[in-house]
Image (cartoon, rainbow, N blue to C red; front, side):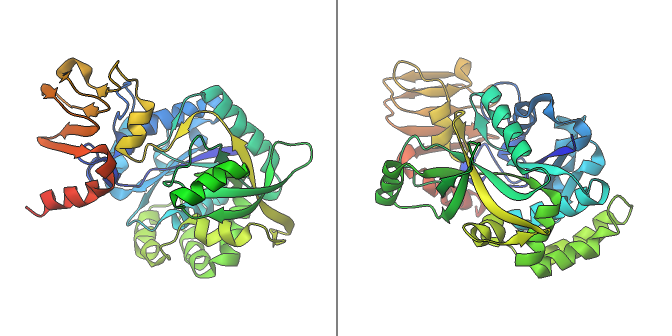
Length: 364
């Protein structure tokens, strides 16, 4: 099949400081202590369903060597280098226009590089069912994660009527990250799923949607088009890509398309959601890593356990790198993270301030 995997790997992971830094962000780190980075785990998760020649990585120009080192089977032409961060709509547009030049009938599965999945077999089943659902149509499919708690850190997808003969649902609306009361209501109503940012759609649909809703951005990709797969590609992208509107694919396309009767690429379109349950986390924070890491009898999660002794401590997450040893006594509900001679000690319920804390160090 003409199916392609697109991995978005350009973020800096500021909420995982000090482990994640601009020069070595979380997607290139063995965050879970399993011997593979999050980027490598993402490729493994999709299994052998995608040929390496059909795997694409969009990342920062600073990370080319990291991607080549960690994914040696992915062709260099398939590693797209953004000269600056412009959010997910330009990221997806750039790779879609480039894929279209060689594979105009391609179906794209688009995923961030920093997710965690427990049941990879169920994950692959959902991806392949989604590809079958959209291929040859103008449908847009997103995987919605069945909520396990009223989480305020995720956006939500409100589903409507089911699609006959499938497990897919029409999307009524995309909802912003709610407050706790609203998140609790979403969970009780039962027709809301977490927005994981995983999308499946044909390349022609991506192009048509961006042309309709972001015509200036489409014009920039049209200007880049002739340079793709040539020696002039990077220079052309470096010149034009920074002119793209800085906008997410949710704002640029999904929210404008959901619940409406619109044609794309000459066919009826729409946004659909597949409610999914394969044990998912976006690993966006220390708290989410804590939730996915095995605990000891005192609910402590330790990565690098041979170097850490916890005494009279509970509900902590500790991560060390290298040969540094730690003895921690009397802590309750803390993040303790060491990396590159920098140590963070922070209450778990204050982790939203970690970016602020990291900035105090960089200013010194």
